[in-house]
Length: 173
Image (cartoon, rainbow, N blue to C red):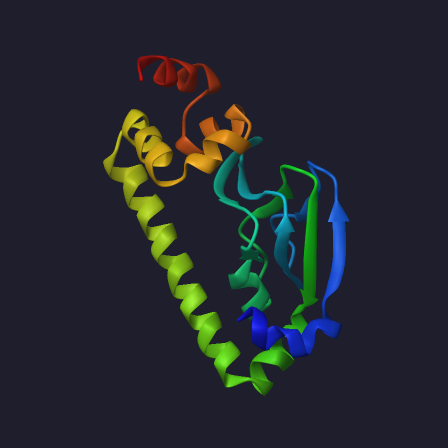
């Protein structure tokens, strides 16, 4: 997809943001898609004042609240930088024009959405089936870079445990 997007590179803007920058607030309509050149982003929801991390994204990933971006409905989650980031951004309008002009980009987008859907389903079912210790073991096995780069309190939130519980789980390993 990167090669096809080269002809549209004039539509992208470069954005540098420090850590802890909210790029999209839960409840807002997503008007921007982010392509991560450097850094880490997370998605999270607010549950009665407690933020719950739902996913992490790194170099090479693209992210928006895709449901909001494609339907103009309010986003179900926030997007925040965890590290200083260098991002390429494209507006909703420009991206939709790219999709209309290049069917192969549209096909790649569908594949991307399907991969993201499968990943979300995997996370969801793991959360239902597995205890936190098993989810942590899966995280280490499948995504060791998250353990290396993401602060422990976000990992705890992602696993659905307190930082103290995560510390106990880590000590048992």
